[in-house]
Image (cartoon, rainbow over all chains, first blue to last red; front, side):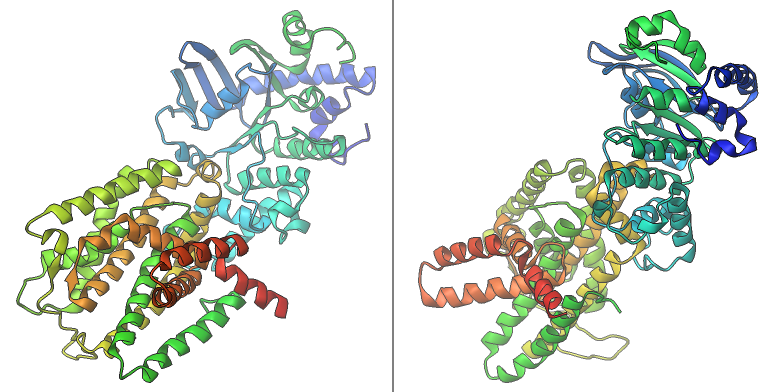
Length: 295
Length: 320
């Protein structure tokens, strides 16, 4: 693995160590030490989003059962589990698409179970979808303008020309710059590559100025290089946002997560640092199976 | 300024001057002027439907309800033998129609796609049978408007509703205003989000927009303008009839909108003119004109995937 420009930044020592953890045993030892100090720091950092005994039943099927999790500011919380573990269900409830059967979702101290789906985004809970979910007919810039327009207002004004705001365009440009898509600014969204579309989707979420980013498999269906791009992007983003990442790519999750939750059959198995999860025998048994001694 | 697309510009510059000049050659023949007027009025109605279907993704088969209501509302609220002010009643009718659309919309917009088609159709049919069975509103025969409204504005009267030529030019101006209005709406911030709602409602909700409210506002606006078209239609011939509300009216308007190119707005004018033109020609050719008409429309829809507006777009593009 080549060294990323990011890992050279002195302020990001801990992440750099995590990133290099696969390389050498020396780095591995340091990273463990850092993980410990990080875990300590985390217990003091603010909880942005929290679930308390969250349940979702589809008739008799328990898609999600008694899930209590805490998502911290400026950190990335990975959620893994086999297919059907209820990861997407959890994410869908965190962003208001599904209503919980029982339990509470708490954002910045308020219970937000009963607010409308669109209010989740207004509160700063932004969501990326599992399948690419953009507006394919319009340009990348316009995609971000749609997302950012809620912040400038005037969305119900039928007489205000849409391109009248410099501020709006700047916001959209900024979001595109954050994910590194400036060069694709004026291209139609359906004409850019799949990986870029996934980046665009993240840019759209960023354009809404969220505090929490819920990402559902942003690396699904991507080649190695494209995934690497997203990993680098998420590393940068987790400095500023609380990110909840559902992902199948285990290497990526281990590399990125500050905290990791493993789910099986709608049940919570374990939450902890990457090392804790990695070494847990229950996890190996339930999810990783044999042949994973590499990690 | 409002017509940014080249093809649109071309169309506006060709159609409206032509429409302005045409009656001068037909002055002796009131029939043709009246015919043109009803085409222009219907184009307004089709345009509002075109906005709903093409720009908002809300397919409705009950839009004729508002077209008919435009006429009936006038009869309901205006005194029978007293000339009322045209502008004031235009305002009343649009506002009342929008309020009715608000109530209907709250029910209808909970559904989408085929279910929305069915529920709008059901509501429109309910309304149709209410008026066609009611004694007070003349049942199947409809009612006459005995006194046409007075068009004076601040004491000045610009035109006379009884004069077909005046009325034609007024309707043409209304059509132009409608086109400009819809262009402004689609080019506004509201229009941007409405477009987003049409393309991807789930994504738009996730971005924090109240999709339902956007749809409802669009529905109300389109209904108000449909009622306005119906009001003008009622004034033209001086009577209202439940057939204005029949589902055939909605269906015809939908065909015109598809023929013209859904969502292109100016295509609504194109579609209406071509449809009515074909209708008129075939009607004079043969008794079985519907047969010709049907095959013609099937052919056109199959040949021009994005309607006549799409053909013009292509021509203009190729010229460049």
